[in-house]
Amino acid sequence: MTADTAALYGLGDRGVIAPGKKGDLNVIDLDRLENGLPEVAFDLPAGAARFVQKATGYEATVVSGEITFRDGVHTGALPGRLVRGAQR
Image 1 (cartoon, rainbow, N blue to C red):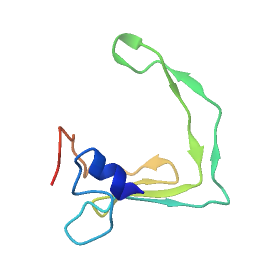
Image 2: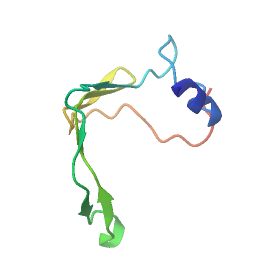
Image 3: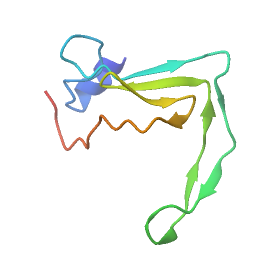
């Protein structure tokens, strides 16, 4: 499923767990997976509002081999970068 979506958007370095690929993962505890209530945050430029909705049950998010979130809390790791078009 993820490989097809990545290919559709030209992200050839994503969507599979294989040598030389990004290998981004979410580790999910399905028994604890739950959405929180939506909230309004005023953290966009000029104080503009946006809706945010947190979730529980996400144990970890791994990007390029580094844990970036653990139990919904950012670890400070920033291994990613802005993607501007197709990646090979």
